[in-house]
Image (cartoon, rainbow, N blue to C red; front, side):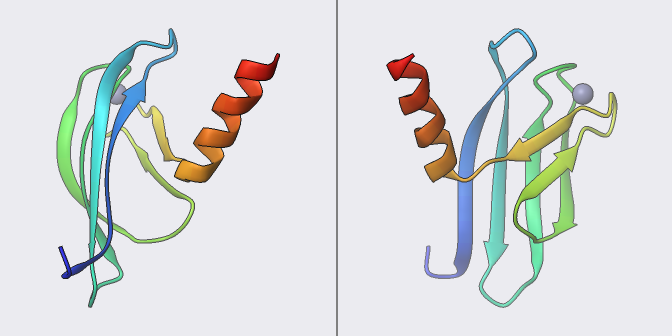
Amino acid sequence: MGNFRYITNRTLLNGAGEEAGNIAVLVRNDSDEADVKYKCPECGFSEQTKKPWQRPFSVKCGKCGFLIRLSRLKDAIKREKKKLKT
Ligand SMILES: [Zn+2]
């Protein structure tokens, strides 16, 4: 995996909180372009595409326009902790 500076594979929730989609992002060491493969959690549309790499990273579904955000893992963990406390 030394050829990539960023790599992730996430499950995506739809509006109802169900795990209905996923996204995989790869960024090569020598590239500012991300290889993206996703399945939209809202409409089920799947696509493989390339996007300029930037943080925070987001992709718009090519069919329904749903904005898929790639939150930092740390933020996701923080949110989980907050949820547990309340
Ligand atoms: Zn969609």
